[in-house]
Image (cartoon, rainbow over all chains, first blue to last red; front, side):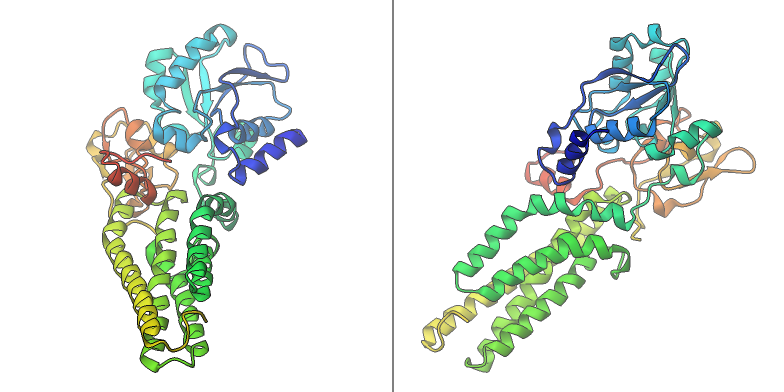
Length: 322
Length: 88
């Protein structure tokens, strides 16, 4: 692994040209690979390929790289790119049957969403053995001839969640920055800061604190964090706006308490796509249950905020800025 | 950790051919080997409906509506009036 490789890994983790870090599909030889050397199957995403070859360091082996369009194993398997058809096709295109004397492939476990082992065997003559989830366990897997139950489990540790933050943050940055800027230009610095804070709560706070936040629903976890931000913004607005009549102060403060939590909740709901365990049925149920509430609260908050400004401007009292 | 209480996983032990592949490919240990050789469904609520077990069950003992467990993909599909969600 060179410095250039590690730079690619960093850029990929930061979401910079992520889909461009690819390895050309084909058959690669490691060490002094020969007819009896094991054959491992990889996605064409460079991080996947590099994780595998790093794990195989010192071994004589082949890596059969499939054309997964630069996507990692699990996502590609779900989309069908790391699938039975591509595997069978790549075996044929590389002439693998003429390179190795055996008929066994070791594929990453998570490709099983797209690869039917019995179909591959019927169509290519190659038997697929599903190796461990993580490349780092391969040497122990090869030494023992099988995977332990722990090797076959996908976790979602703090580290796993934390590495997602830069990519998710980068994707959301234009919208968050734009919305905050708009609020500021409209004369609402509390709103601008609130939008940024609620977004950060969802993009970073929720992933980091995930197991400790209340409820099984990501939306509720988001409502909880966003509620803290909203209450904080509401309190700040109420305290600082002391020159205004009480009803208006309450209306404006309430607008933050209503509008900001759904922002964090929506970000939390979208985090379901980053996890290793949410099911489509569960996500669908959560969407049906909470999206109307999010929309209602956000709409009410926005209306309250606008109404408070219109009334304030109409009274010609304290100006619209804080 | 959050788990779905509702999923579409269905398993018929009478059809199980005891190949054990479902226990191999499942990332959450939903199935385990039974004492009589047939596989047992032990953690139904942990199923994330990825479909790996169904795809690799030659006996057809497992059925599940596999799809993408991603709200963004579902919202995008709904807005674009597509029948199925797809990863970004």
